[in-house]
Image 1: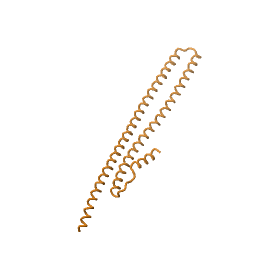
Image 2: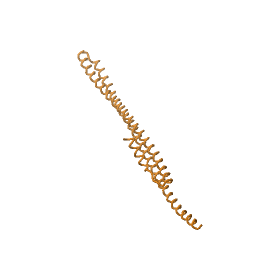
Image 3: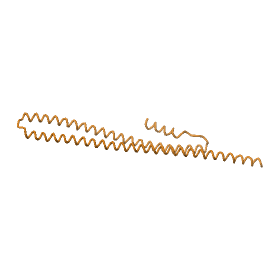
Length: 183
């Protein structure tokens, strides 16, 4: 009987030691999970800032494009007024034809400039779409990393509590996600 009591007392002492160790491990894993969540929140804030910066840049580019177009239209209008005035003053047919040729050349330049503007606008639209896609990919990646870190932290704690073994580090899974997303 006394051997049974001695054995029970020894089990109680060992049980207290194991319980303290497990409580310490749970505390450490909880701290790691909180740090991972904070890092994911920081990455989400960065993705939001990049998205806002891309939108501001797009607005500024659009304003610059509008300013350029207004200047071009003013010059074309001014040239039209000059040509109209010149037609009123001209009496000689040869001189009129020479001036019309000059106007035609200017209109050709305006057409070329308009084509350049159109191409620049198409390029801007493509870049804006690319910025939006990048911003969206960043947002999805941040969400995936945050979810993976939460799952890994829970799995590690559960596995350690029930088996006493340590599992794969959560950052390995996040690193694999980054490699898969960005190549």
